[in-house]
Image 1 (cartoon, rainbow, N blue to C red):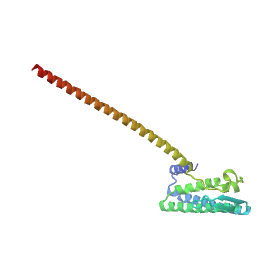
Image 2 (image 1 turned 180 degrees about the vertical axis):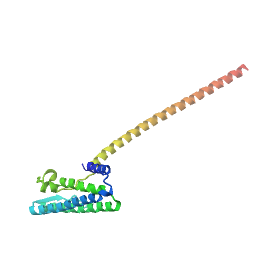
Image 3 (image 1 turned 120 degrees about the vertical axis):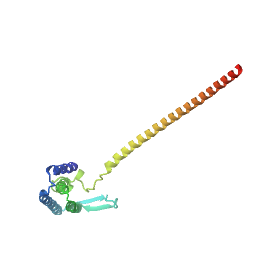
Image 4 (image 1 turned 120 degrees about the horizontal axis):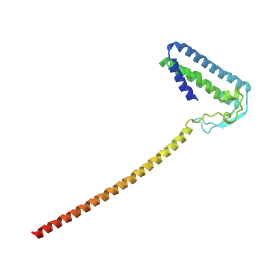
Length: 216
């Protein structure tokens, strides 16, 4: 979904000529408004979580690199507030990077993309799903919301690909070795045949010489 939005946006920017300086102020304004709404919405979520004050106990093993295996004892309200703080931090960090790229290199696409993608990400965020849409915190929305490993599936695929590749290489090596053995045996047989032919030729030559001597 996100890749479709990214490539679709880049195509629209080039097709509609939005890189023209005359659209610069408009795009900056839209991006500024969208960012302000995003940051403001995180504070709205923070107020909602604080008012609910869900003190249900929550225990889980920390999966953060460097702290793996550490037992975390907290509550739902503390967990959600910590997630909101992470969201605010990542939003501000993204804003800093996008603004730097825009004013340093004149890029327009990041402004447009970061006007659309945060809205999609916010809709899929468990905080939005639970506190705004009112969905139960179960299944995929069950706390804690540990970050997914994007390389898990990729690693399995690579393992299978490597296994297939190594199998093909092994089979190729075995085929090459067998063909090499066959060619070696063929060369040996041909060389032995040549030697026998030479011997027969020498014998015939000797016989002819002896016969010529007897005639004389």
